[in-house]
Length: 240
Ligand SMILES: C[S@@+](CC[C@H](N)C(=O)[O-])C[C@H]1O[C@@H](n2cnc3c(N)ncnc32)[C@H](O)[C@@H]1O
Image (cartoon, rainbow, N blue to C red; front, side):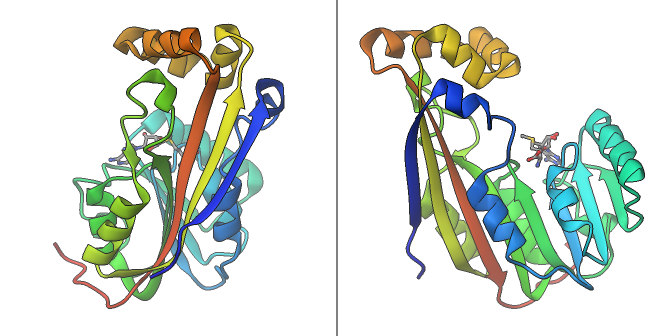
């Protein structure tokens, strides 16, 4: 059983703002450690394709899947600009659709950055070949804990480890990458979180929760990500 690699830091908001839109460094390290030559990769919840651009220069074929057509359009346009011909972006729900709808054979890699559920781990296990790898990045239960409810899509490291084991994977790497962002006030927190999240939290009460926590102190926002890389032990049936 692999130990959890823990990385944590505490930084002021102005420093965090320089890196806000970057992917988790720990996730990128795990992603970049693999050899994608002659390999087929499926990126689940690809969004505008951030993970795909990391892999596309080397892979034989990369399929980005998302249920949001607007984001896929942006991804396709950028793939055209970069001249990536072995990349495709398909629309679909990765939790409710069998993935052979998008690629008939077994996959060498499945990547999923900030799009994770039990159903996605289950389907990854069905569509990866034996020895194929799942590389995932997801919110940890500490993520945004200061708002009183955290993130709606968070896991503990034990939950991820158990899900991987139950689905026939062996974890090669399990990490927890945490950043505590120190804020002077709620305006700082607003900048750190960005307008989309703030709007959502104002609507669902989490902004009030954060304001309460700032009132009691310390004024901070925790960002915590689990990164896992797991090997599929035996290839499961491709049809479901
Ligand atoms: C937070 S974004 C992450 C995008 C990208 N992986 C990245 O790191 O930039 C989550 C993405 O997952 C997509 N998504 C969520 N659930 C999905 C599902 N069941 N099937 C396909 N896409 C899904 C959303 O539409 C969104 O584009």
